[in-house]
Amino acid sequence: MRLFKKVREICIIGMGRFGSAIVKTLLEDRENNIRLVLVDEDEKHLLPFKDEVESIYVADCAEQKTLESINVKDFDAVIVSASNNIEIVAALAEVGVKSIIARATSHRHAQVLKQIGVQSIVMPEVETGKKTAMLVANPTLTLYSEHMVELQDGFVSASITIKNPDMIGKKISDLGFRNKYGVSITMIKRDHKSYIPEGDFEIKDDDLLTFIGKLENITEVFEICAKVDKKGKK
Image 1 (spheres, rainbow, N blue to C red):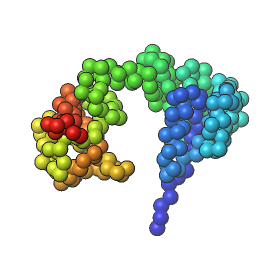
Image 2: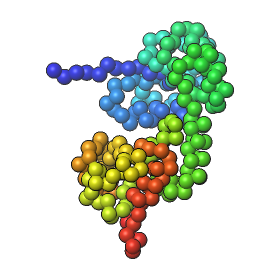
Image 3: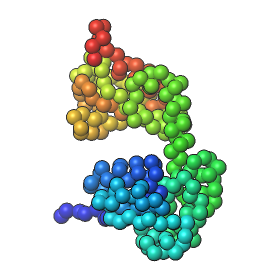
Image 4: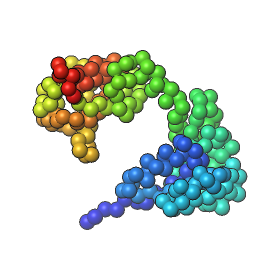
């Protein structure tokens, strides 16, 4: 018997760079069973998506009447990606929206959102600043890292394309990264397909490996993965 995923209806308020990035990411995954409704005060921000989403609305979402007119309570989640969002979030809370994901531009802003009742808060500017600082402080990451994400307690997740010929054909268990450096390989991408590898998974040239570990240990492992042969060939 085939199981069908429940369709989730998501409303996104604020279609600036951050909101647009969220929409584009969700639209790329055609199997996520998500229907999107977009709201912004400026129609030009909505028009690029008008043929790709369920509905678009040009409206001021700080007004309760506006929120009620689009039946905002019926959505599975509302994402407030606009930066100046205190009044919008307050209005959403007042009309009874339970699942709100809101953008905060600072820790103080996040505290205010929490006081209003928001449980899920994202801070893209703060996270970007932290990532930039880590890259500047670690030249190896600047040169080689892809898709780096700070986790917590000094741990990061980062990806690198394998260039070291000594690693090609080796099994993950033979590399010993976990025992030597406390770093684990969590995913391998090869020819546009991703794998969650076991210890006997063999590395091939140009595999994209994703690691999790302490920042300083990830840096050491990346120096190994990025090595080229003596002639400088990749």
